[in-house]
Length: 525
Image 1 (cartoon, rainbow, N blue to C red):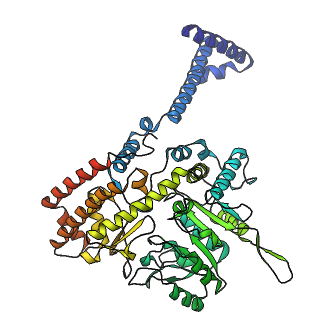
Image 2 (image 1 turned 120 degrees about the vertical axis):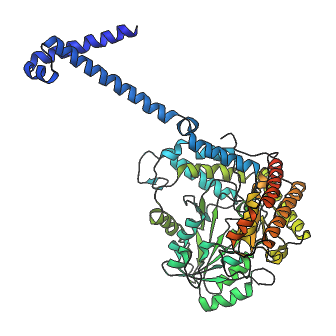
Image 3 (image 1 turned 45 degrees about the vertical axis):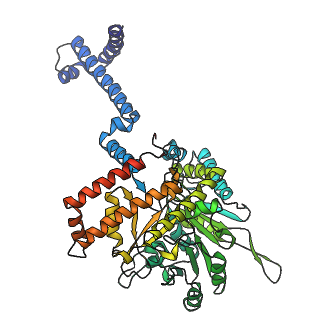
């Protein structure tokens, strides 16, 4: 059959080429093809034509094969690295407060054809065609975001395009504060975030402090609690245009009512950055910032357990009525949307926006509320257990998912503790504590319970986690005591000594065997 098809192709091609020879300069063709007569030339041309055509078909098939291969077949090296990371997550204790394990449906949404589409602009106002369904998906993400936090769309709007929490904050400053406008946020060593304006006497560390003028507010060094009275006094001097009520490592509820009063005293805007606690807010396990704030920003991947992205909520509708009875409207929406695009971003990541939509749907469920309750219970339980073992917990406890541990009382730095914990498959992060002067050599660690709670950990399991943490920190203290230097590099040299490696290996095996017993979402994606 195949021979007959080739013969038919040859015959049809030969006939067409014979007609071509009859109409053209045959001598030129003979010379170019190095043949002596028309019959040989036709055969040679036929062979060349069919060879190229078959090569083209083969090449097309090879291209389609490459495009349709799964990752394991097309890039074994990368695939293996991903499998290694998957194994690390499964066999370790993930205790970084800003991390979580997202759902299978979020991972599904992230890996869809939505990734292929460019859609600069906003629903029904795009710079590209072909966005009929992209518009519907973004509108769905907006609707579900408002629903998750119980917001009336007549009074609140939301932008779901920010790539993450940091650009979301910068976009708000750009929209509502302007170049070199004044902002105030919680200082980084006191539990604040880089994007709230952090700088040192030698360097403006965050771009926020480069393009805007920032002044930090502080915690009471004795209690670790925000000093609202000092903030109230300092705003009268600094006169910020915007105050940020938000944290990165602060384990207590924020007093949004007090923040509102302080902001009103100098006619400042109030931005609530609820990135860390948004999942708890949605589940009514943390105070509601929407009641008092002008703008609310958040990531969607921490306690909210969605994709790595950001959202900006803004007030809309009637702001006030003047003496003449004229309504004054909020004007945040257009300014913020313009700052996001075209101001600071290009095309939105539509696969991520789809993932936001499904994450917000989950955040509105009873099951998610139960999860958020357990996150807080686990954190409070762990804080108590560590205190019983002699560790200092900043603020003497926690209201949320964060446990802030001051290790200076046991003679450790956060960097040394983090190094040993990582070596036994416990992931956390070194963190500044109140009174620290060097963010690169902090005196504590930050622990969190969202990821472990996703895996099904309850209080009894947290007891065992506390034991593993204590064992690891005691090994770190031993290593520190046998190191003749305060430098981290010398600490690592001692850590690598055989007697300590033996202890670390045994503890790592215990941790990994324990962690592997627990459920992990998305392992089949």
